[in-house]
Length: 186
Image 1: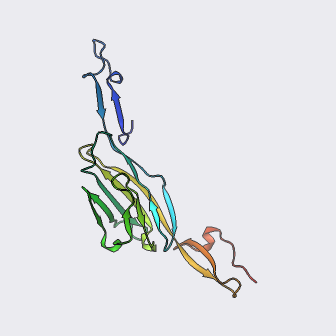
Image 2: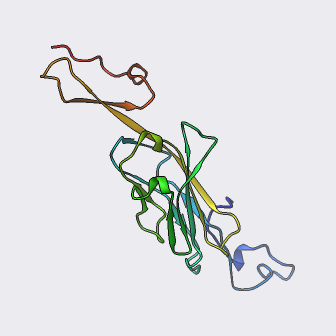
């Protein structure tokens, strides 16, 4: 059984004692753990647009959210060895990284750990990690991750009839590596 799954065990599910009764104690036994799921493993966004980074968590129904802690970090593709803290929800308070102030926010906290990232930039590309902890439910946080690619914009024009044609590809990759069509000639 995965340690990140929420598990409910009934006494009948526990090993039998010599007297045939289930488990050490009668009744319902709760073995709780936190489970974090990411609906996507990778996302793409056009530079300047917004994107929602999904992160769902599941906890015991009897657990209160008063000690909920959610931390989003980013390991940028440009420097993966130096991750940054993007946004934090800690016991009811939200703290944003100063470089992202006004561009990042939670969409449904405390019931969801999804965040929105506005006015995306090339520097936003990388591996995002969502860590959720809700003491005393579990000592270990649930962790999910996804890769975000930011697609650059470029306008290709050979004359006025093709002005305004928009081509998009991941910043840092040449067009040939994505199998794009050659520019139109009129």
